[in-house]
Image (cartoon, rainbow, N blue to C red; front, top):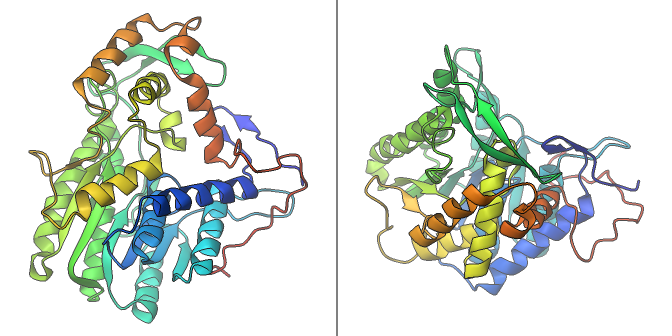
Length: 396
């Protein structure tokens, strides 16, 4: 079939297998270009198919020659219908890993469930023995609690007051004002249940109970703080409460791993174009301004550059991991530089529909958004008839 992007709001309904493969290959080449890393050799990535999770899997495999198991929840293709991009990413990753002689297997299912956890434990026991590094990079709007059977839904809302500020429709470039009503009822509790640290701790507890964590094992979860511009709706909103819980969980997990000298960290990462961030009001406008400034300063990073730097400059330096006063790894340091934030604050006041193309990098935003779904890559013939029925080798 000829596969073209079909947009509905903040989502693309199609994905291109050849483009997704090119995306994975580009990331692999970047990691290889940066040289070998003395990193973990047996790695579990929970949420391994897109964004920071995919970048972590690629960096582990092609930076440290690691054996990797990836867990994700993606839609396979059906005749005449494309898979979700994460499916094609994972298919391409396994293909390239196997070509390089690396162990790579994947599990497709709900990582919140006891069944998928058990399936993962069984695979580790059978194939790898113990894990050195666990990356936790789940991004889901809902979670079915396996203990209670209750389905929790996260919300992106401010706490206490209505939030009003600028946003942009990144498809049209129209800048407008948006208001978001404050949370109510069980919104905070539900958001913490979905996006907090409970499931991360459950994964680590399950691995440790089966003696599947190697001595000195490390686990890292990903978080975001962001600027004062977005804090009312993000870091001081419902999602911020979930991130606070996630960060507190790192200390709980570290305590539980003391007998194997294990450590848990939260890495605070940079704002990037993801399916999740594209749906958050205000964030697309912030990112388009951020991209413009960081590219001009020569400090712009995508997911793969960010994670390769996390591994090379923070996790595997041979020295103690450097953290902030709250125990967090700060790989958002370039984004949060005072000079960068001062420039964004000034541009934010000036940004309108008419001048955003000049003040910000809306084209870069759109390009990155299309790239998420495998579109817009050099070297891919998008007019060619393409086989949508691509499988992930280790998933039957």
